[in-house]
Length: 198
Image (cartoon, rainbow, N blue to C red; front, side, top):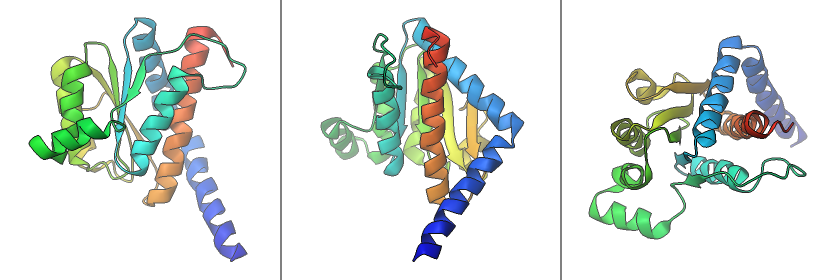
């Protein structure tokens, strides 16, 4: 059983090492952090959405911005919300319009020009994320996608995503581990850019 544990850890390290070794991806992570920082600096908001484990990541990252990323960093709360957390909205929309519309409907309600929507889809094929990004475009909302593998169908649509952060792995668990790491790095960039906090 220890070999199973070690193998999982080593595969996780390998995926993260590939990210470290990819200067283009590192530049994209910085660009995403700065996009979010500029939006928040202008008093706009960050919205996050995902399904399953990615919904948990959306909630986690939004909480880091509303509360704080790093203990000891006392700063004002930042306007961020997860579109995955309101069961009444999600079930009403799923019932009335279909599950594919659950994020698009919320972006229509809350999205304003210069806000940022961060869609999190391990495969890059989540239809409700795709439609949420479409609605973001209509609303003048900037877009970031966290995905993996080849980026999936969403990345093929160059009209939908300003910045695509594609984790170099085909393994769902490794992609999800890297997504939360990248999400926390984005929070760190925001605190550095807006408050000069390390």
